[in-house]
Amino acid sequence: MKKIFLFLIIIPYIIFALRFSGEYNYNYYYYQSLNAYGENRVILNMNADKGIASFHLQGLGQFYIGGPKYIIPYPDNIPNYVIDNLPSYYQLSNSMKINTAYLSIYYLGFNLKFGKFPMKWGISQTYAPADIFSSTSPMDYSYIEEGILGFLGMYSFGDNTISFIYQDHTDYEQTKQGLLFENINNYFTASLFSAHFFNTRRIFNGFVFRTNTVEYLLSGFNIITDYWGPGIWIEIDYFADVEYWIQDSIADYSHYFLIAGVDYTFNDLLYTSLEYIYYSEGKTDGFTYNDILRRYLNDNFLISKHYLIPIIGINQGETISGEFAAMINANDLSSMIMTSLIYQPREYLSMDLNSSFVIGNLGKDFYGLPPIYTFQLKFYY
Amino acid sequence: MKRDLFIIMFISSILIFPMTVEEIFDKVDENMVYKNMKFTARMNILEYNENRELSMDIFMRDENNILIEILASSSGHTNRFMKKNDQMWLYIPNAGKAIRIKGHMLKEGFMGSDFSYEDMSENRKTNDLYNMELLSKDTLYIIKLTAKSSDAPYKMKMVYIKKDIFIPIREEIYSSSERLLKELIINEYKKIGEKYIPINILMYDKLKQNSRTEIVYEDIKMNAGIDDKYFQKSYFER
Figure 1 (tube, rainbow over the protein chains, first blue to last red):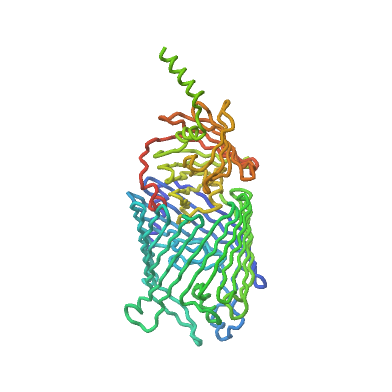
Figure 2 (cartoon, rainbow over the protein chains, first blue to last red):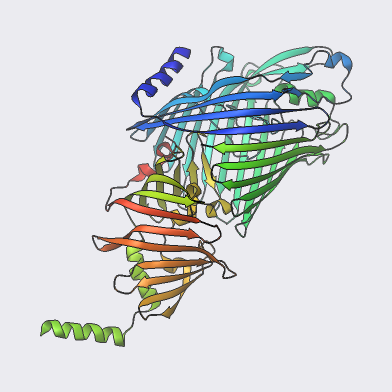
């Protein structure tokens, strides 16, 4: 697969006349009472089109200044014999990599993409459980979108589109397959989707850590409409534990999510949004350190049953914009608050100031994270 | 003799039966509302004495189906923008997923220009969106438009229309508090078939200093055979 991947990069480079664009960011991260470091980030985009084919590549370089380590803020009540088995920090190091590199071919309603291409599933703006291909945690402040290696086949007929996605890996249990049907009509956009994948999780059973791999079949549906003025969306994601349903194993790891949201902009200035997420296997109270550990170890961000996500954004003449967002556990009312202020004096220059902090006591869902402040200077070229 | 009689009848019909403001705008919309047309255009964005240039193809099947493809830009970005019925989408190849444009984003500058996403994709008849009041008909028709539809792009506009060919040569765009927001000037137009089509348009954003965007239409194809494929996801996200 690596040879094919290199081939996909080199051939378009020779054939096409490439266009270049990019971005330079200086990012400063300050974790209150824990750590602070800077990052120089360079993004280079190369794009080309020729007839039915196009080629896209994005390279990423990250170069750190200071003590670039992410210190993991474990809960205070975690026993020493547990924490001794866990890393206390992630060391960040300078790196250069290819984020996306893919060839796209369109012919008579068919679109095929090969290589490492971006792929997003799910309707939620903040946290999309259906995004099994490139899931992100709202707690990862330095996350950069990375493509998936594989291929995508897409065919449109009328207002309908059907897509097949295959995510490749040498280990079969790391491969993923997805099928999506989408309809865009006068009133709404709706999708039906299904995917097959494995999820490997680290679990602490009170004495030792062990890994557990579960084979899942995801089935879902979402719909979004602006027909009545405000945007309204609903999504249902059902994750069936294949082993339990087919091979009759003892434990059932099946679960589902329900997402509903509404957004509206007042006077073309004030953007408001409210989203609700229901997680069938979430707890309602009494969160232990083990629940929090599952979140850290498995990027399993949701651990409670009910969440509310309000967002308020203000945009003043495109030069200054601000956003307030919160993720509120509707059971224990602990929450994670995120704010951002963006100043963009020129099309090619912007300055962002972000902060995030949690509200909650020991035993609540959101607890123990230090306030985080980030400053970003972005220069687009 | 016949010619003189025709001229006398024509002038008397204008004097006896002057056009209503709705009829004036029906004539304007015959020039300004497009179906099954393809435009190749160049956009020059001047901001703070810095110039950026984009070249693009615009596919207009009707008022509900519009696709704009950025073919090249000074910044190297080649995004696509699609209006399909009431829904608008932006596709950025490096992000790999179409983003739904909603609310305040509609008012934001298209690729950082003085034209908004709404300006670039408006192809509905004026009479469906605005109430009209004829203020003057001396050398130009001067017409005040006030929004009657909640999804009209602007609250108020003043439109200056050439009387002989029904082309608006200037538009002033106001907020609900009657503050001047934008000014649009049509510098040049061309007769193609039965239509007079603007080929050089200037837009000034009055809330910004030293900001101006020019669109020059370099190639215009009527009956361009714009079929379903241009408004399908597999073409848009290709």
